[in-house]
Image 1 (cartoon, rainbow, N blue to C red):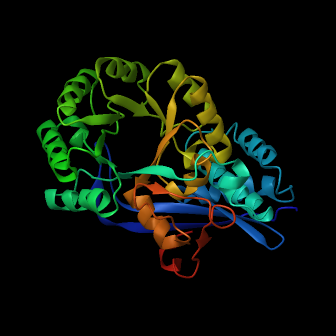
Image 2 (image 1 turned 90 degrees about the vertical axis):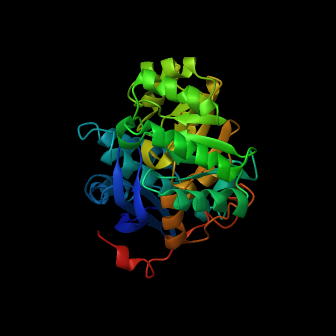
Length: 363
């Protein structure tokens, strides 16, 4: 079961409307895909980042993978992590490791003729999701249509919108959009917000208290996720949960965030932190400190691993990535009723539609 050299491709997909959050705007999303093969079986993994992530896989990681056992995923993960010492782990290198690691786990499950969720061990048959989007560029009608589709169409009982517009300089509109969101989803659905680090510490506290009037129970990155002390101060001052962690590129990052008491729920992104291998370790670290975890973006890359976690709160059903993963893969999951069931088919259950998505290929 010796691995062949990984095959890498990159695709850029335009957004279906202008998108922005509190600190960034974009009009396209790039997915980098790694495929690892032994014999007649192929595993597929991916991350979201620039095409240079693919170059890093080809130049730095592929020679390490080629010729090694397909079953020894922890050994391969360790070799990749050690190899990037001088390149630097956060950012491009971490995304590259993540894509290859996800592909390796998918391949191993396929070789064993198991759903990846069964290989990892299922703690829950269904994984709860929350609808995520509500970009600051959306006009009121667009926002209402998206929220209505999740809550009243697909019956997803929890949703999240972006606030912190223009680095926190549009607070009246932030609060008006939260109020409008509550009116659309009704009193029973859970309402979350994500400021993407746009506010200052005391500004976040003031806004958090106003959000409580609309029943907001989740305040994501009220200040920069680099400001662990600030997150802790905001967390102590508010009744809603304060969350962060999506920019964790290695296990020590999560250890620092937990030790600082910065969050009520730890967010983990397997497409950034080092793949499923490091995702599971970060979740165990959180559980040891009495914290639940939530997956960040890329829902189909997380679903199988999320099903194995006893301390999972939910999974982010992020508009951009759901749209792309539905376009790119056969076997995409259905969130109707607010949960997905990632236990069908071998591996993670997805098959890349190579020919159909060729028009988006950039590398």
